[in-house]
Amino acid sequence: MNILGIDTSCDDTSAAVVQDGQKVLSMVVTSQDQFHQKYGGVVPEIASRKHLELIIVTIQEALDRAQLTLDDIDGVAVTDRPGLIGSLVVGIAAAKSIAYTRQLPLTAVNHLQGHAYALTFFHELTFPHLALVVSGGHTLTAIIDQDWRMTIIGHTRDDAAGECLDKVSKMLDLGYPGGKIIDQMAKKGNPNAFTFPRPMIKDPSPHFSFSGLKTAVKVFLENNEKNKIEPFPPDVVASVQEAVMDVLVVKTHKTAQDLNLSLITVSGGVAANSRLRELFAHKAAATGFRVLFPPPEFCTDNAAVMGGLGFHQIRNHELAGLELNGKARVSMK
Ligand code: KG4
Ligand code: ZN
Image 1 (spheres, rainbow, N blue to C red):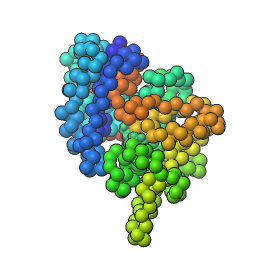
Image 2: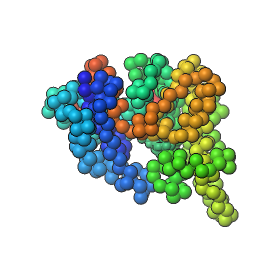
Image 3: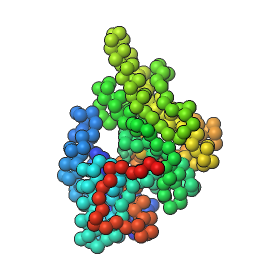
């Protein structure tokens, strides 16, 4: 069964064709970074307009790369939540049009579940396991069962980890998307040069918080400017990155321990981070936990995971109709 996956939840326009939930026949991600860069973050209005311009060519490119036409497609899976409403509606309109005109089953995919699904393309997984989904919009841990259902355990009370990195990058005028730039720059810096707070690291709850860290960096930079101190920028970003990744590793590990789950998967844009991968590897070696990541291009937003998860949903008759609409948020309960 070939499923056409579509994701336009934020600022990447993506389409993919996936066979039987497992084999990625094609995956196209048309990045809009160049249009948002000068604003230091995603501008929802621009994202929505660019999705409109890019969606048809992106879908066509996904079909071409798979050497297929719409005649070979057996179902359509589209992200309907969570995301920017103006962005979601573009992918949803395209998916509904294709499903309606071709009389194909349509299914609506949760973007966060999609991130966690990326692991299955690359690893043998056991269920249930704990997924850490960490991106620009979300930071959460969830139990994933064998039907790919997600029970959220911990979530951020304010900013997401990626959002914190993006804002710090903006404060330092390093560019967008900040997480990737900080990852590269931090390699030249000392992660112990400065000690930034690790919010909620000792809190017994499974939740996260990153806005205090962002504020601490802001105050640190203001004080330096006042006192005419110019710290080596790679040292600053390496130290901030260390604080973010330390919290993610310690809290996720504790949650897995509390739930008696021995497999942890890490997905979402921040999962591409090289230091996060190193720290989790150290922790896994010390504790015996199994920690798995997808390759970086499957950490950031992509429609292959929609095509994969969509296959299972369509098989389970979890279908959507033409009334399907985007939802900005999902319940964290
Ligand atoms: O999953 P994603 O593509 O979109 C959302 O669903 O939000 O994640 C984007 C986030 C951004 O905050 C970006 O800065 C971050 O992922 N990111 C990284 C890296 N690559 C992307 N953060 C840390 N290290 C990276 N290498
Ligand atoms: Zn995402």
